[in-house]
Length: 429
Ligand code: SAH
Ligand code: SF4
Image (cartoon, rainbow, N blue to C red; front, top):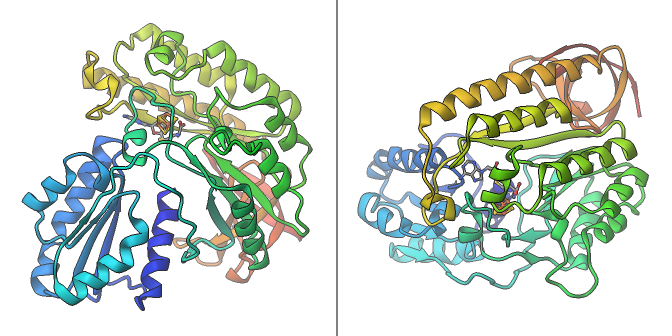
């Protein structure tokens, strides 16, 4: 989501006449797109903003922009004014479309611009200025914001309430991307399954998927993130029967204990979650399932943690993002009693070990079989090699040159190493 937002910022800047440089000393403008989902993301952003001070000193005309979730967080503008006064523009999450105006004002007048719209339900502004950086993959936002208020999460506070884009706007962008030659398009939303609820025109995520599956040609559809409370059977059925939707679902469970799930305000139980997993496995047997897991949430005891470990063993995730719970100011969980960090650290080590063991085991199943892979990129550290993903979302590395990027090839997997698969091309599609 953040990468795609950076693509939008880059599109706006490109329209102003800027082009990309990898050399920060050459830059006339440096933009930080920030995240505040966990404390370390926030610290990292401020660390990077701090490190730029010397560049601004050496080049007075350098324009510095801070945008994204951290910019929208309560108190950030004051912190920036006080500790990083050399930042020229701060743009909240609802103000991205004002980037060009703000840059022009600073360029002409040097007057600082702090643009934070506190509106929790701003209108969606359709804007086609996007500088896409990930051919053959492309992202499309289908919803903005979130209504769920999971008790640990800052997203609803910095991204506002859920707003869905109109289906016709999404499909128009989708079709244009296919015409431009993009081969894999990912629908983005904090909870894609609740897409359309606010539109009241009958749009649903299942209908959107069905419509996007109907275009001609060879392409793939992915989506993230699914919320287990809203993942309905019709979506599973459409994935199973579709031509283009990847057999790959990211379904964050967060925790395996019903007590913790309730405290997190997730609105499902482990039993309900496992029921969905069973349905997915029955209807889409080759589906790659991934998840997000958190340890150290308030009130988590060893017994609760063991419930999370049990889920990892039962589901068989191809991979998982694992996090230590991080206290976020203003959220409900911030008022709950926090557990010692050493306990969280010990738990996350055990969780990662368990998941790695599962990933390794599942990777073995890929060996000596042939999979269709969309070639995505060259491998920087391995000249003469390219990489891409299977339909199920697994990363595969094999010999090939950059002309293959954007092509579907059949790859025989020869060996696996943890989550990575290595193989050789046995044919083009
Ligand atoms: N909307 C998505 C996820 C958004 S944030 C969903 O509901 O699944 C991505 C992940 O960051 C979350 O799934 C969660 O595992 C993690 N996360 C969010 N807030 C966090 C916090 N305060 N501390 C640690 N991890 C957090
Ligand atoms: Fe955060 Fe929950 Fe919304 Fe995901 S669904 S963005 S975790 S509040």
